[in-house]
Amino acid sequence: MKVLLVSCGDVATEAGLRFEQAGHRITAWRRNSSKLPAGFDGHSADLLDASQWPSIDPGTEIAVLTPVPATRDAEGYTRSYLQVAQELVSRLETQCPALRRLIYVSSTAVMGGGNGELVDESAPLSPATPTAKVLAQTEEALAGSGLPVTILRASGIYGPGRTRLIDQVRAGTAQLPTQSHWTNRIHRDDLAAAIVHVAGLGEHAAGLYLASDSTPAQLGEVYQFLAKELGLPEPDMAGQAPARRAADRRLDNARLLASGLELQYPGYAEGYRAILAGTSVRHP
Image (cartoon, rainbow, N blue to C red):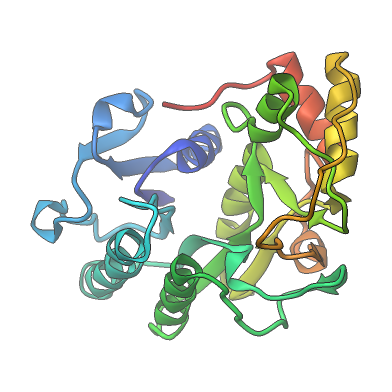
């Protein structure tokens, strides 16, 4: 297959390497194409400027959109997610008669849920922040485009170079929450594997999957595990509850697993041990 990776950062690069290993041809767009693997057909393009977009190979069968926000506010998300998605849809409609699947990596930030409830793909959109509202608008624009779209709604992505919790434990700034705080995550490598897996499902792919591992966990439990692995003292209990409470929910990945995907890191213990062992690297 011919695969187009739009906004090809760390996750998409890992997916691209897996596509390439399976014998597929990879075209990738990013601001600085010199950072892409040698086997990719790389193109430098500022995706925020539609006049810089390259033409799309009409033989492209799979397109993967993995945006990165220009700035961490609603305007930056609108430019990087919603407007890029709308432009991509327009071009795929006119330039890609062979398109079989457009895969968009979104975020579980668009979802509601609280009090530890188990949430799956049937939950309605309930974005709580201005940036999450843009992500929800982007999902709606793509789902309503008429193209064969699959949305991979990813939970907290961790992996090589994505070590926020490890860094907090090492720095002594981690604090055990005073109230319930369920967390959900997916390892970078499993998210990349999910992209390749969905591309191979063809017309059997669903329109939406929650991309999360099989082990939702209390944040305090994860901190305690990391401290033990690092040989450091257990973090102290927080003095008070945070001013803004995080979404306290558990994400159900049953649909993705039922489609045939096997996770390399089904829980945080396996994933964080691999990170601490340095078994993989973050792509530039």
